[in-house]
Amino acid sequence: MGDETAAAGSSFLASDADRELVIGSLRTALAQGSLTEDEYGARVLQASGSRTYGELAAATAGIIPGPAATPGRRAANLEAALWAIGVFGAIPPAMMVAGYLANSERVAAIGLVLFAIDFLIALMGGTIALGTAIDTQLKKHYSAQPPLPPG
Image 1 (tube, rainbow, N blue to C red):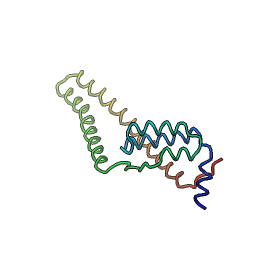
Image 2 (cartoon, rainbow, N blue to C red):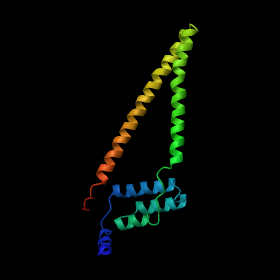
Image 3 (cartoon, one colour):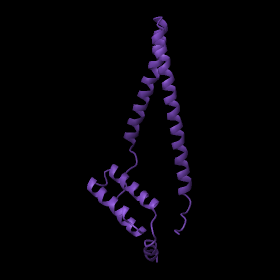
Image 4 (cartoon, one colour):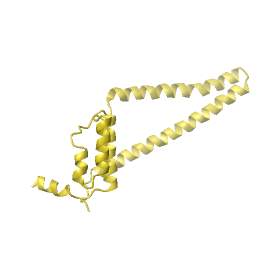
């Protein structure tokens, strides 16, 4: 009976949003190495021309999802971020102190401008991180709910 339900569901018309979602999945598979450039191009064309869910499913058939992120890569990203924070967070105050000790208003002013730029960049980064965290939580919340029937 499950196969009959799946077969019946595969004849429902797919929307543009459904096609875009499949193309996004294909893009992820390409980035993870599950598809070659040629396979990706052919499957994107297939997905773009798909009219039904069954045709869309054929565009992603045989793709094995790869890992989203590996711990080694995450650790390397964290190390790079900490290094950047250390360097860029230390330079402006060091310039302000050097300008003060050398009695150079120009060096101190440059340090102050760099400090302000660093602050704005950190503020933007924090805003992006917060937005990403909220988006992730919302996706988890709504993906736990049962899907609505088509139509």
